Amino acid sequence: MLGRCLFALCSILLLGAADAAEEPRLALRAPLGWTTTELADPPGRIRLAAPQDAATLDVMPFPLDSAATAGGVAKLALAKVRPGLQPQALRDGRTSVGGRSAALHVYGLDPPGQPRLNAQVSVVHTKTRWIALVAIARETAMKDLDPEFRRAAASLDLGPETLEALRAKLEVLEAAQRAGVLTVDEYEAKRSALQKEIEALQPPEHVLLQRKLKALEAAHDAGVISDAEYEQKRAALTGAKSAPPAEPTPPPPTVPKPPAKPEPRIKLYRDLRGRYHFRYAREWKAEDLPRLGGTSLTHGGAKANILVVPWTGDANKLLESFAEQLREQTQDYEEFRRGEGRVGALEAQVLEFGGTGPTGVPARTEVRVHVADGSGYIFFLFAPQTDYAAALPTWGELLESFALGKPPTDE
Image (cartoon, rainbow, N blue to C red; front, side, top):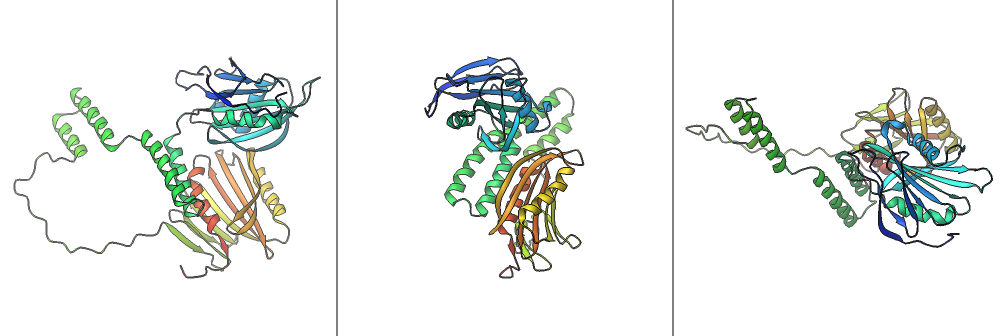
């Protein structure tokens, strides 16, 4: 039995066959002594196998249209590894794969005449595909093998992130710094690393200018544009003047204006009834909801609501009552997180899930509930999957700054 033996990750790089010419190969480090095999179903799949205990880790890519949710991909991947067995869902959660957040689905398996197995399926997606990691071991050995599975998953090379994803990370980092989660040194180090990645994907201005000038010259040489049009467009790109005026006229004297006071990026919202206050990004539109007894914030397709309802029960029951209504309106419902959290200095119950709403658009939702003095406070963030990361900085600012009552000073 592998037991408590700790395998150092070897430096062997495992390469799976590319599932398409334009797709990068899957690459990760394997625990020392494990064997590796390339499999064809699906293309690009690789298997790591422990020398004992029949423990395996299958890494496999799937097209984005193969399933609508991470849960669907997990079941599809598990069926590839252990066909014919009926998995028993044990729990769902979040984990990390290749430095990125991933969905985690844990199952129990009962192969005929064999000891019970435990399966941990981690699912992450890139811009072009899903990637599933299926770790299977005897239930009694999984606890000892879990660190090896995690180290292998952490080493998976998912390739460079998209420019949009890196910018969203930068916004979340700035929100964390404003909330005091990071020290100045930690913030500067992380920001510098992200900026380097962004600059690597986004060419400098002079490189973009040279590309545009070359394209313009090619169009001129091909006769697509006339000489006059070429000169005009080139002057517009370079900022040069095609014909300077013969007698330049000096500009009239101007009286310097005092610089306008910049509008603060973060605004303070005061509930009209004096029940609470919080901060939010000025790009968002905030309005009172008198009929619902709360506040609404909107920006693009994202919406953050605070609802206040009469409630004398506990927070868990209110959360479940609210979540039940949401589940009825959600297809492919997938729960990512449930547990305890905070809203400012207040304790709260938290639920995070995804799925397809009534509009048919994949979306993500987070709900937090706090109960105090006969009232239930429901904090609700909803955003299409494509807008969710961009909404997190304002959501984090709201949660960190929320407090009951009026602000202590007139800010």
